[in-house]
Length: 475
Image (tube, rainbow, N blue to C red; front, side, top):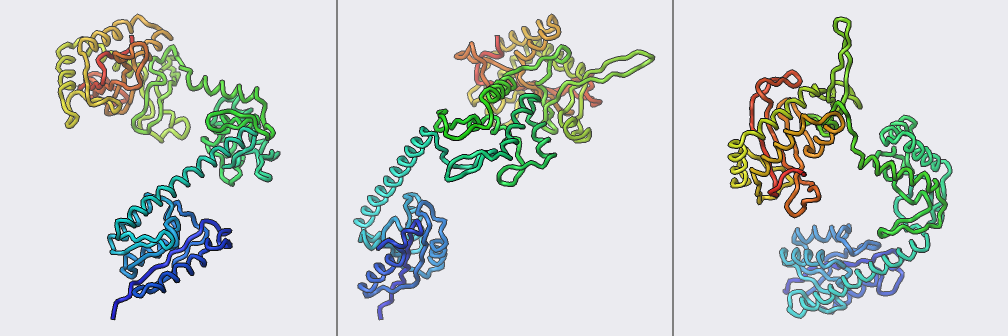
């Protein structure tokens, strides 16, 4: 007696409405496939797997997942569908399914296309049909994008997360008066205080939430302050278009908020007493170290002491970071004196840069390139030494704001910890002589013998630099 082939019938429609259309419903597909099986002597139905209302763009479908599990268990010999696109519309997913079928010795037949994957003609027809299915899908996507552009040009909202302060009525944005006051307060507080953190804390204290019932995060507040939808505009595909919804705030307040944001981004805060202000980062907690001072009275006289303090100790508490603060004068003197010392040590610079230029990326040497540098390094020790001497030689002549500007022209960042200090230097490439490049040289050195920072004595160490350009530091 001939062994019967266990056939799995798979049916699918994308939407529930299609179930009512003739030969598109799952039942109609099933009847067509069963008729085909009856015409074959060596086939029998093992099970019907049906996914009504599921898209063919992916394979996250319950019945399909169940069928694949039965295939892996060896229960199925043949999969039959009404059309190829009933199984999947994605060429990538289809090829993966075919590979799985082949792995478990399972064939695939499409009833209407009449091909078998075990034959060359079946494989050819399979590829042709998949190409047209993908073409149809991409064409539909383009039509959808064109339709959304036309809607935006007419001032209509294209959907998505409903902005705070609005609600949807018949797919149109309508002002929610209660939540519109939240948007008003956010803009007014930002224009007045210029602090997103303060706005966030106020909203959190008042337990004010978004449309989804969650607290407004700082990033959400930032997006509110940048979203032109609140002045009656719609942004689509990089274009700002007039919307047919009512604005919540005036364009004047919106423009002021944008100017404040740009100033905060571009503004370089300068201090007379703190040349490294805004450059120091605490390695332990990852926060910036901000300038501060304290006044102490000794023998009837008041003396002011300057520090760089972790901002986390301000925002949270004093014990949040073990580094806490470091003496500004000691840190500045240590960094500037060591850069000056290194700038005069020609033998050390020559040998160190030679090792960097001729060392492989594996293994640590006295020079350590930064993460932004490429593998091909070509540093000129003469140019580096000359530029570093220029920085260190002119620095003592600078005072106050001029000193801060001079330091910020050469030093990009200082990473501070009790064990190590890393100095990141700006540089310019040969092809970009007039523009600073974002990549950086990196200088690491353990503290000197006679320097005490934050109560910790250090040992002399090494200086590490890395770059993929020959010309170091800006002019």
